[in-house]
Image (cartoon, one colour):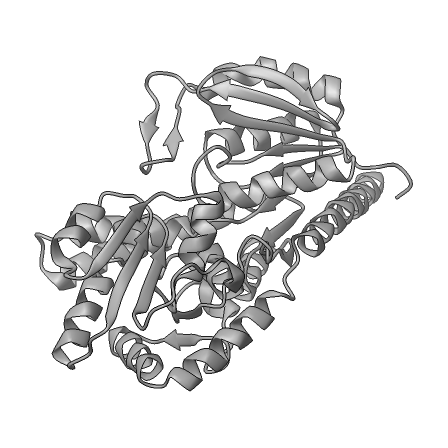
Length: 403
């Protein structure tokens, strides 16, 4: 297309501290660096509007009756009070496409205004909300028999997934972070479904940032310390390693969350850094040797990729998106359950040559992941959205003419 497409972006997570928000901010940075017209509409502590280069920002304050979906994510039942303000911004900006990223107050507004103004809609999937909710429900129902808990949580997971897929029928094109979700959304929505992977900053995350030089094996974890991240497996892992007679290791835990108290109480040999960013985060990654990431609900798993870029061997679950980042036995390990997490951890602790070889391969694999390549693909998807919208418009006009 000769003219640059004008994109109105409605991210469900932007100022929060999570992988989805990081990806959204990087997309906006890419647009600004490449002088692409972008309007970003997001929730914030206060309402304000400003412009930075080619990017216009519209921050909208949530009301006092907003309720928390998580420590960092909220939903405002009254968010639609901003509709007229956003409508005016859209009419002034004149977007070719509206891009939503999830089913929350911001995304619902973006979807509604796309329908009202007849602007083609693209949706990208960033969070496995169905698995996230099911994990939370299991923790809430722990007082019930296991069979009943599993039945209720599995039913809820299926229904939430059905509802989310239904929501993603609204866009003309949908983007997903792994091939499993690409196929699920394609089949469930009957829309064009494309892969939107994730890049990694291989200068920020690098083995060169390592600051420790000792014989201790550091087992690392980076992320929110929440139930849905399955972090209590780390306690089980430590107990099993001690029982197996393993010594000379410690856990390096980066992140905050309501499971921190449990972990601090039950991990015998662990360092907790709290939330880190910038150079401190880079150093923490590089100081790890093995990255233990037991989450079963991540749609992608940015942290596993950042660990690999830092020359740290990731061990990830066979459930969720991180497994697509690992070549099993080469750049990391994919664990089918706790026994595998234990087996692969011991294997790497006992074979230093294998650990070192896999560290190098993990880093080499991460070097091929460029954010610019990823986001160039997103802009290709924007153009495809326009083509699909125009094709459907022609089909509808032809059908109307036949009546």
